[in-house]
Image 1: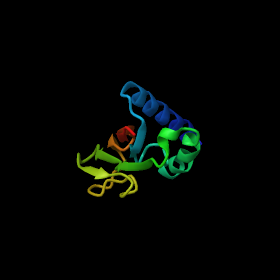
Image 2: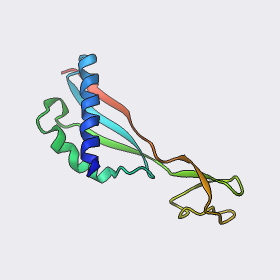
Image 3: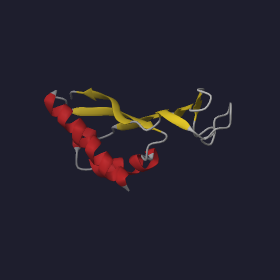
Image 4: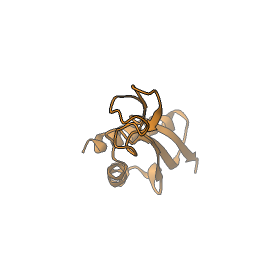
Length: 116
């Protein structure tokens, strides 16, 4: 459910950007989401039309996601690996001990805009 408040904040940030840059319409928004973050892209997609329903500048705006893999470095053998793909266990030595290096991110990666 926190995706609703996150989506509202994303739209607020994009609206501020449009005002600062005299932009009239947003064609697309690209969000970067780490697969280990607590953000569920499907929920963001579900809430997006609700959040922008009274905002004409977002009519026909496409919402895209870039998923950042959850990666870690094994604390035992030092090898990097994908955490979810390997169920959190180092595929080299079998250790559960790791240091997270990516996958918790969430950011606005980009927008494309048009002046009508």
